[in-house]
Amino acid sequence: MGSHVENIGALERRFDITISLEQLQGEIDNRLKQLTKTVKLHGFRTGKVPLAMIQKMYGGQVRQDVLNDAVHKGFKDTVKEQNLQVVGYPRFEAKVDGTDNTQYTVSATFEVYPEIVLGDLSKQSIERPEVRIEEDDIEKTLKIICKQRVTYKKIQRSARNGDRIEIDFRGTVDGKEFSGGSAEGVQLILGDGKYLKDFEAPIVDMEIGQRKTVDVVFPEDYHGKDLSGKTAAFEITLKDLEEPIFPVIDAAFAQSMGIPDGDVKKLREGVHKDIEHEASRRIRVKLKEQLMRALVNVTQFDAPVVLVNQEKERLLQSAKSEFESRGIKSDKLPFTAGSFEEKAEYRVKLGLIISELINVHQLKPTPAQIRSVIEDAAQSYENPDQVVKWHYASEDRLKEAEALALEENVANWALSKVNITDKTITFDELMGRV
Image (cartoon, rainbow, N blue to C red; front, top):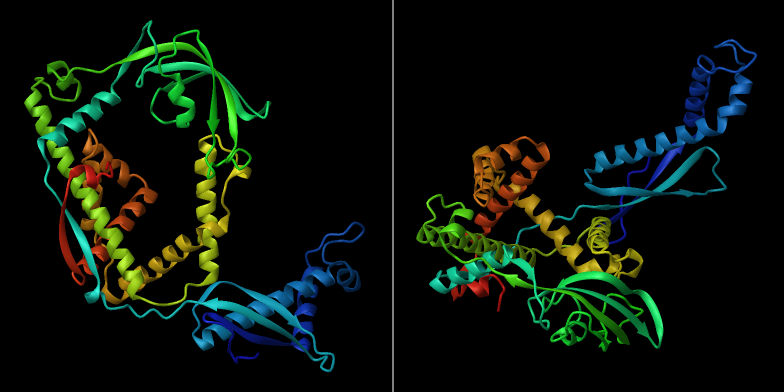
């Protein structure tokens, strides 16, 4: 066996594995002899098949199996001897030497985990949002709740933004129909922006039964490459029209929101409390994002290519699933695995840094911390106790909570090291509404 390890890149390593053909043949012979005891062949009793026939039938496969086992054992022994932390699987290549028929040599190429030296966070600065909940925030939230509980009724008038409408449409480019350009009985909320503005805006003021042809210019970055930058003519027919009816914020509404006595003041107090809880959660998320980015910024090392490639593929498959759930075929997607290079590298680096922090600073969460994460998440639901039991009923869900608790420990550790600047913002800014 050879044990000289060659550095051929930042993290890529290579060494040779040399196997004695004499020892290899000895193991092949032993395995073939073992086969004679178990192989069943028509015309022979079990254990009576001649060795020559066994060799003819299974010799090639047994030789390959023995060779593979020897190569993998040689690789494992050298890795242990050299104390190498291997990432992924090695690539084996046979080395041909016509002058030596007594041994077989294979070259093993692989990556190792990088040495991670945690950087100095004391020179990193982050902004901590500070939010004061105003009466206007409560009003806006109640309007959002009302919008979620909207009902509709049929009405005879021209269409307005906010109406629920039903349309038929037929689109053509240069006089020819295109895939996905025609449909019947499509429902949409006018003005919600589900469709392109050029498509929706002309429907305003149309009446039931009216037909209109409009030109729609597809943006250059449109997900359907066949249509990007092109102009399509759509013939639109308005078939049905319903206006929105929003609930009145009164005692009945308060009761429907879980206030038994219908006290609207208690409803507003409850909404205030929910907003504060959501603001606290959002602030923590923004802090974590900055802290994680700071950790990556100050800790310099090369990410293993094999891990980055795996993460790129995972991100690609996740994006495909999301688009397919929207009815967009995967062969029409405007990106490849390479599109996720930067994001994948960041995630891999962050994961390795977090693992190092856990080991160096003993940040593994306690059962009490995990339960705290679960109970905090459960407060957003009507029956928190049931949500807590639901988490503990599944090992996978419990692991998700453990990962969140671990992330919280890492964030708390990093928070104690960085420079923090408080910045006052509105609740709308925190929620990304402006």
